[in-house]
Image: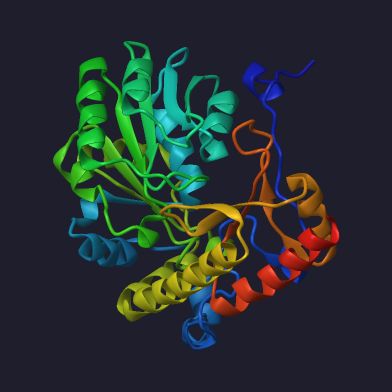
Length: 353
């Protein structure tokens, strides 16, 4: 009989729905409308047969990105989305039998990677008021902790950590010999960044992605930022050609046209303000923190609302977690997208009463 790693046998995986392209996609924090077509067309002009025949070259992108964040190329590692960044970091820096501390609920791939790789996951739960006590995170860290992950803003709820809280986690991690991962997938929607922590400390890594604001989820372009020693270890664990050339070309183009970032941020902010005003006007209980997502408590059961919206070709997120089971979550988009969602949502919610 062939061998199968025990942790893989026991790992529970739930994969995203397929065939989503015909829906209004508000379930996975994507930009529903994507990049303006003129930017896409400009990059496509450069995808010649000769370009596609070459293996990817990352140096130009890494130099541009390093300049963008005030670092050096040696501080940057590209990955096939931030999912793979998480996996590489765990494979390199977490010892078998040791634990990884996160808050919960949070991005599922931290727990999933622990299950796949055979590590212990120590989730620190949110309180009933949708906050996390930093003292609870610190208490969860011990001599068996090899990694702590802080998502800032956190997915799914959108809360953030202060600089003082981050410093306390980094200090405790130094004492127990752990790596601190600060996941900034949603940093564009929140102006504070902890990149300096990664450049100034020898046990801190910051993760970024081009999937959210930058609207390149299909191309899988992630970045790890840290001191050169940590980055070299990760590069050793990474395949030679981890990120495809088309993703790199789009990333380079956006970094050469930084005005697109401000444009996309302004579109999201307008849409977020629009949906918040609608929820206030119609007396809905809601939560909006620092990410590009909003929690709404419908007047009917959340799971029933999710299915009703799906029948109208709109996808939203629900949770089995006790804290969030009565809520639906949508990612924000333009005023046009938010208006389309709310008109249908409001009608369905009142028809069910």
